[in-house]
Length: 212
Image (cartoon, rainbow, N blue to C red; front, side, top):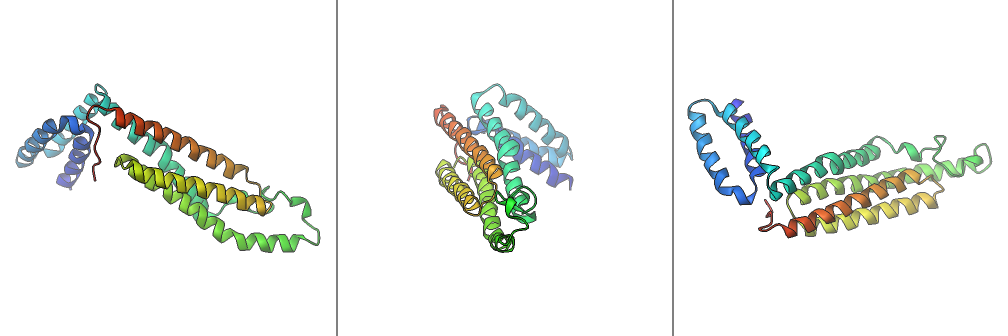
């Protein structure tokens, strides 16, 4: 267990080094094998991780990597969890009686039963669409950390198309689309930030290559 944990920490530390400090990373790997023999691998790996993170703040490549992970873990993946959660556990802003229907004034009228049946039949495709949007966020986070900007662009375009489709269908069904508009706006902001990150990556002296 200790060896597995220490190796995982070393993987993170080496990834944090970036391409410009590859020789230092290779030297750390060699020293780690010696630490394993001495059964001091966990202490050595933790020290390497702390040193790598401290050094990252001093170089532009390191700041780029930290920003990438902060964006992925702090914004994109939480948005993915929100979208997937809404899709799998219900879309609360779509349900009748919860303020979701713009045509709520029809409650109690002859049209209420028809409206509810149409709404209920639309829940599954809307949920699937939102699930795909959430999974798209996961793909964007992965592609961004892999520096696969072409994949990020394709996925981002699909997410925006899906968000627009979701809003249009909600409008056609007389549903309150304010929450969907908010989520689409946040997705657009995310993609704009990712585009800035891609331009930053292109300006790096040697670039941060794809790790895949």
